[in-house]
Amino acid sequence: MTSRTLNAIAAGRLRSLPVTLRFWDGSVLLADAAGSAPVVSVDNPQALAHLVREPNQIGLARAWVTGAVDVDGDLEQVLDTRPRFQGLRLSAVDRLRLARAGLRAGGAALLRRPAIPSIEAAPGGRGHSLAEDRRAVRHHYDVSNEFYSLVLGPSMTYSCAYFASPADTLEAAQEQKHELISRKLRLAAGERLLDIGCGWGSMLMHAAAHHGVRGVGVTLSELQAELARERIRDAGLSSRLEVRVADYREIRDGPFDKVVSIGMYEHVGRSELGTYASAVRGLLRPGGLFLNHGIARLNSTGPRGDTFISRYIFPAGELHPVTAITEAMQTARLEVRDVESLREHYPLTLRRWVANLEAHRAEAVATAGSERERAWRLYMLASAQAFDAGEITVYQVLAARDGAAHGLPLQRSALF
View 1 (cartoon, rainbow, N blue to C red):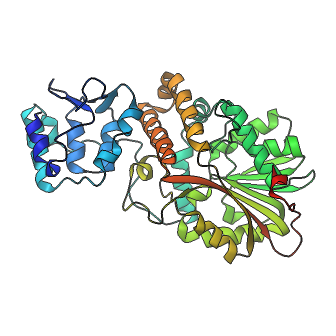
View 2: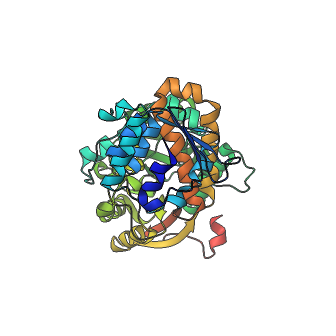
View 3: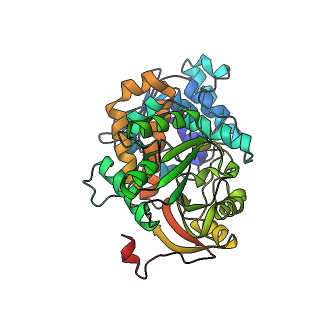
């Protein structure tokens, strides 16, 4: 591969490089600051084959996930260079030039369509029927409980933690998040709590053990439910907690005193937020409280088409501004009482998950395969940077159902 090829494509935007590129044939294209720049190894011509056919996030993701592209050094340092390539597009002529250069470098594989990674979800669907949502959720969560335990650690909590200090352990910060939610909901002994998207049961267990509630958790993942029940049983809480494999739209045994949803509404879809809020209202007693904890966009427009996240991490997942969920709550006659941004807490959480994965990489690969390990490493680091940059954020929104007194304190400080 020669610099002349890069100079000729993308209107010359690749003349100067923030990374050094090393190709399978031994050729090297040096970065502007070659001594300190990370090295991206294009180890297999299939990397170019993916990019020529899908000159976007999907092509790059396929090359990364399969290992055709790798990084010598710090992956996050490579991800730091993304702004340099914002808006870059490869024309049909650019792709042809890349293919020819690859063939000259001995990349006969470019003539064949490369296999799509086994963990890639099918393109497209933005529907949110019960069946479609089950498929999407199980693609993400039915990986293996062992894999998630390696990443998440003992807390088995797959959502933003709450740090009093950056020095807090992940386990302490997750416990603090559960307690923060418990206080915002004013949980009291004997109350009935519904956890929509309960994961492996950690919030339910905290609420029962520390606040004396009775609880029902729902998840669409059989594997999650299986381990959640086991953890609840081992904690001696089976008489007070129940975990079901069900969609929130299938719950028929309300009312509940309180409802919590942590990191689930991202799967709901913007078109279904009204259904979601109305369903929650129907499950709450008059005066009951609902806390929704979820990721949101800080701009009003989302990506066009499929992305790395939609194909490899969260099929059919959608992010929208926090105003979308607050409007849906208001329309459903759920009065918004408190909104708190936890944006700075999520990069701290994600980097601890990445550290866990790096510490147990061999076990993660043995458990879930190298494609999954590589996809999760990229997704968590890129997400941490997106939170740092203010591209996305995470909010806790507390709302009360009408019809009776909600019991919230006069001063917000009392919530803490």
